[in-house]
Image (cartoon, rainbow, N blue to C red; front, side, top):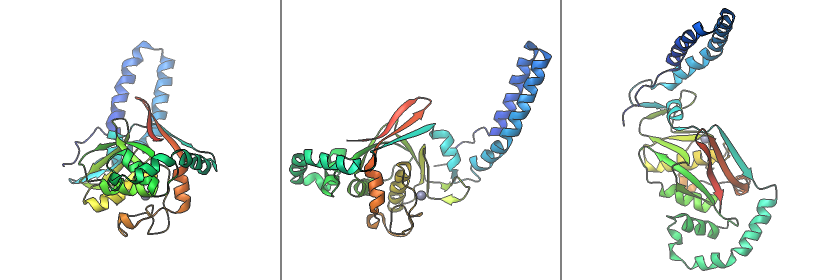
Length: 276
Ligand SMILES: [Zn+2]
C-alpha cells in the first residue's frame, strides 16, 4: 500500500481564501472592505499556527509512512460523541433483572456447542453470558477501512472479557488499517491511535494488531490507560499477548454501565454502540 496522495495543505486553503475576499470587494463599501481586510488579517493570525502544525503533521514525511492526521482528515467526520451510561448502581440492578429474565435462554444456550465459535453477535452474546456478564452485550458498529486483518482473536476477547460484540456498518466507528509506518498525533511512530471520532492502526502482524484493535476500541468506548502491564489498557501491546490481558473490576463496571454511544456527523447522527 503506497503513501496516500498528497492533499492540499492548510496553506493552500488559505491562499484560496484571499481571492474570494478580493472578488467580493468591489460590491461593498470601502469601510466594509477595510472591515473585511481586518477580519481576514485576524483569521490569518489565528489560523496560521494551526495551518503550520497541520502541515507538519498532516503530510507523509517519507514514502512508507502514513500520519494519523492524514487518516483523521480523510476518514473521520464525527463532530461530537455522546455516551449514555446507566446511573451509578443501576447497571448492577439492571443486570440482575436482565439475568433473571434471560435465565431460560442462557441455560438453553449453554447446551449450544457453537458457543465456542462467537462468529456472530448472537453467539458472541451467549459466550459473554457464559463468562458471567449479566447485562445484554454492547453491540458496537464498526467500519473497517484498508487491509483486513484476521480479527477473530479480538472478537473472542471482547465477547468473553468485555461483553462486547461488533457488526460492520457503513456508518460505524471508522477503523483504518495501514501497512505503512503509522505516525501518531504527536508526530511519533506508533502502532495505533484513537480519538473519539475514529481509530488508526498499523497492521504488521495479526497478534499485535488484534491487541491494538481491542485497546483502541476500548479507548473510544471511554477507557483511559491503565498502569498494569497485564491490563488491556496498558499503554502498549508489546508485552503480554492479547489472550493474557485483563480488565480490572472498575473497568468492567465502566463498560457495563455504557448503554449507548452516538456520533454526530455532518451526515447525521449515528448509533455507534447500543446494548442488547
Ligand atoms: Zn492507548
